[in-house]
Amino acid sequence: MKRIGFLSFGHWADTQHSRVHSAADALLQSIELAVAAEELGADGAYFRVHHFARQLGSPFPLLAAAGARTSRIELGTGIIDMRYENPLYMAEDAGAADLISGGRLQLGISRGSPEQVVDGYRYFGHIPADGTTDADMAREHALRFLEVIEGEGFAEPDPRPMFPNPPGLLRVEPYAPGLRNRIWWGAGSRATAEWAAERGMNLMSSTLLTEDTGVPFHQLQAEQIQRYRDAWHVAGHERESRVSVSRSIFPIVSDLDKALFWQQRDSTDQVGWIDGGNARFGRTYAGEPDKLVAALAEDEAVAAADTLLLTVPNQLGVDYNAHVIESVLIHLAPELGWR
Image 1 (cartoon, rainbow, N blue to C red):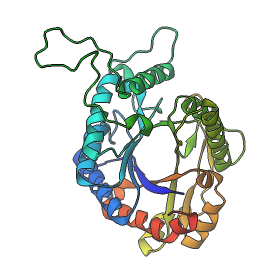
Image 2 (image 1 turned 135 degrees about the vertical axis):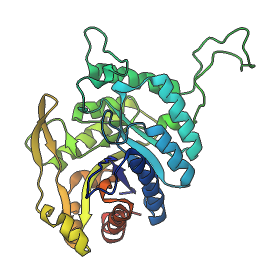
Image 3 (image 1 turned 30 degrees about the horizontal axis):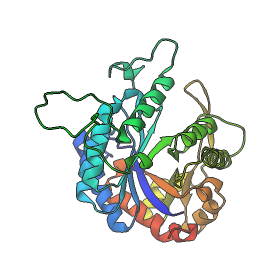
Image 4 (image 1 turned 45 degrees about the vertical axis):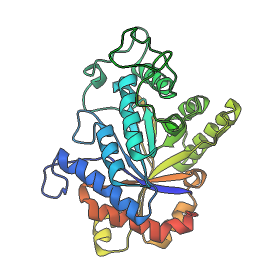
């Protein structure tokens, strides 16, 4: 385990027990948690993106702001739903945020998951072509985005421009060198992991897989990771790939931890129905540190990945989430081989 970061869904709710009452709270506290995580020595601050929801929706202003407030920590998404994206405009936003951060963006993109409204991408002006699906459209958007951030010129310049142009075809600006190698695909199945490997994207695998073979979640995910790495090798990419997994991990080291998470210490995998098929959800890890170390040591996917993302309960506030991250880094991470 080379890197440990956090993944926040950015929920906000104006309720009595939430510490995140508004969209402004969610955004500003996300920045503060990235700063706190960097100070604690964590390696990454990642944010989930959802539309039409009281969650984080537009990642690039947030990533740019966090990039301006930090200096070392990786900043990423897990994931951006490509059904909603204009690939060229996204390339501009991503390039700007990456330059502001000094080249620290790690962008997770994917086909996405069910949103709060039916076919929400249509309201954003994106409609699948006849005979194709929204998943097809997401992959088309993703591949176009990957092409654009390579930095090759493709647009015919005006022969009488307002400002002087460099010679040749023009590219989307600003261009962020190296960003293409820092794009991850959020794969929900073994087949989509192989698809990502063939196209030279890193693999981001969460606590949900949209298939179920009857084996424990961590074993199915470990198989997904191995199939991804096999496909990467066959594709002949020159650079080394990266793989992340997400886990809900809560070491119980205080009375408040016990009050919040003691009942989840016996959590197990869950199987449900999502997006038209069976899906397997991973367990929550909660308990005393020594028991969590033993349980995580048996998690084959955690062992196979190079990056672990801790899903944090952001509505409990910055201080508590920083405490959770610190508890993992102090009590668990060394035993998992971190650094």
